[in-house]
Length: 176
Image 1 (cartoon, helix red, strand yellow):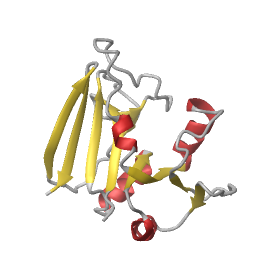
Image 2 (cartoon, helix red, strand yellow):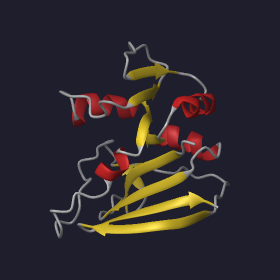
Image 3 (cartoon, helix red, strand yellow):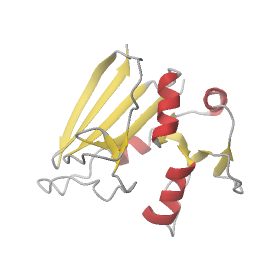
């Protein structure tokens, strides 16, 4: 059965974007530039991607304006805005839990919970995330968009693996 996997990078102090909502700081320390990390291996394990409209807008306007970076993957953009869906990108304001249940029925691989913070926190609160793969970037931002918002909910996780490269640490956890 498909798993919902949060695969995301954050600063050492827990931010996924800086105070200007930027991500230009997403790089290692330069100590191992030949090592490209775990993304290439990870992306092969997913066939569906869920993201919010702010993340979608950032991708198409800043990060990759000339080419859709998730070609060949079914992408669901959670939004109340009026966008035109196509074969690969579906815009929806459907309940996130129901959407994930529907994707799991047809998906043969994992579901990537790509971002942003609002979508991640909704899924976290509903207990929908099966694996957490958190990439720690060697920077302290001091301000910005936090990965997890403050709440009274605690979730016990089990460490599955640790990978290090270029000053970056990938932590992979699963729910107990």
